Image 1 (cartoon, rainbow over the protein chains, first blue to last red):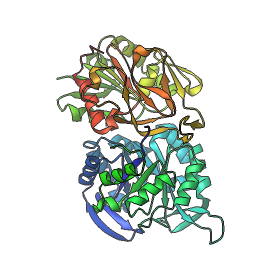
Image 2: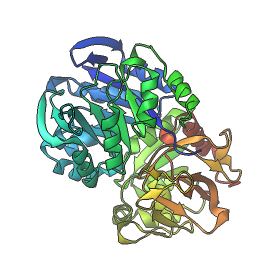
Image 3: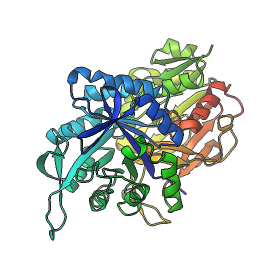
Image 4: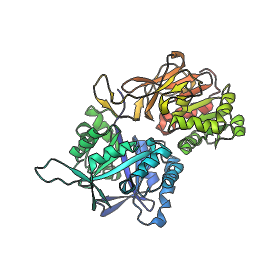
Length: 257
Length: 216
């Protein structure tokens, strides 16, 4: 027995409400973030991640209130991503009760920010989110690039190399999302997951594409992920976190039960 | 009404610790502070911490907290968390070698790079991040009501080791066995984050607030 593989439900939060986009288009309301977080905690979630997708900067503070409310009731690690651009943004999230912040676009446009952030608040607080899309064609050896703006804009940056660079810059963990799979419910991009897990010595969270419990188990056993993240299968109560853990445990994966 | 001082030396997220303490005892007055008067007046002292130990020691000295803590350590129930455990040791390898407060005998070492599990031969990730099992190696008031081998949330790249088994309250395995909880008299210190360890962690904090510093 040893370290457990983690199951992390993700809540997409827009203007203080939990939503989940399918390919970022078709958004359904899955409720109040405090209620949802409390439910996940009681089901045995190992951590909870909030992704703030609020578009208007006027409403950015809503996520702070969400984090404060959740952190007063839920005593497991909380990560907040979306709109983190300055060390000051990080401090505000940590002061509200977050334990880690996800840095995505800001890392791509200014990698030094990751270095500065990890120096100031410590690597353990810094999760670098990587949105990757396959760019190699059939018959070529597989290659993935970082995309920004919800998967619309290519950057020309190789995703696997980028993960290694972010580790060197002080990232404590990588949140790896396949933009090809996100919202499709067809499973993680396991080749991408394996390639990134092999390239870094920090923990990797697999994300994007979970449609059933086998997908979660595959992320660990085939992809090599240290943690698996999913949103919609938990939001719409298709499966509970407890069922997911039971399923993984039955397949020999060590989980916290 | 008991006063709980959560020592603020600029290292890490103290709000989480304060919120968890308030949750387990709504009557407790929890104060995040670096003021000598608060620390002297406190009934319980919590010493959290995240980040680099060199910076932590510099900050403790700059705020003159090292001397105040050493004075106040004698009798009050004291709980170190994460870096708070490591700072209590004699010496750490981190930051080119850093002397600690020397309250507990032991050293702080980095997990090897690469860190390979001698049993499975698998490469282990560093930091050690996530839920691992805590093995209680002796009875202690702070373990009361917590099942043997319960899981707690860890996040660290350095670990504590000691030659003095009397000071070990609990161990954890991550490719090697390390000290996950240490104790002496009125002091108790843990490598994991009780404030982020769900029910088991809250129980430990509740036990701490009820502890009179005896029987450890």
